Image (tube, rainbow, N blue to C red; front, side, top):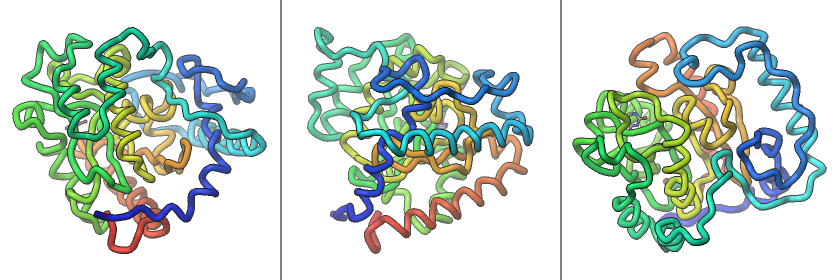
Amino acid sequence: MTRRNRSGQEGFHARQQTFSFLGGQESPPLVSPPREPEMPAGADAPGRADESPASPGERSWAAARLTEGFEADRSRAATPEVWPLDGGILAEGDAFLQELEAAADLEELGRVARECRRCPLREGCRGVVFGEGDPRAFMMFVGEGPGQTEDEMGRPFVGRAGQLLDRWIALLGLKRHQVYIANVVKCRPPGNRTPLTEEMRACWPILRHQLRLIRPRILVCLGSPALQALVHPGARITRLRGNWLERGDIRIMGTFHPAAVLRDPTKERAVHEDLRRLRAEYLRIAPRGGG
Ligand code: URA
């Protein structure tokens, strides 16, 4: 099994709170966030609006937001890690959550997760699509939720979008079994619609514990819902894709969802740019020959 090269860790810890400014109302306010630059009109539009291209104004807003966050947070002491969907989740007194949190490895977590009935999605699908890959992967991909093929096969990203994702992983010089692949929600939303915030929140403890157990160093968010779960509730892929973001010692990058690229192949060029940056970072921090 591949051992992790933690040599870059100190640098990452020094920037541990980089993204507290993106914590938003739904994250526990461990530190008071610096004043945020104003969003351009329509910047917080939810859902499928991420298909529209970002205006130059929106891009510079995102850049300013990133820069301001980096500047403002450098002086902060490290605090425990928080995530956008953490708010309102208390394991105390909730036997199912306690069981999830107690899972010592992915196998056990998968077994508990498959019993989940915390939201109505489970009623409308065949089963829980937990995720798959190297349990010690350096790089982890997070999509939004299983589609029909994934629901039928019980595996993430195995339909048309998954075949494209496989090609992207190959462009990174990796094999599918060397990374970990999961989704924000583990049950197929009806008609493949975008998962609702309540559904993402209900499912979040599973992904959160997957992250704790796998401890990836690079997290790739495929589309807006993944960015919203892992970076900020108002994040949109058109504005943040291709930027390096950080949480704890995890480097996070958003890129277009493969399904969005299948619908609009002109987006693939941007994805290839993002893959180049991902590859460079992977080579910088991953152990030689490791997954
Ligand atoms: N789309 C996703 O977001 N996840 C999958 O597993 C398949 C398609």
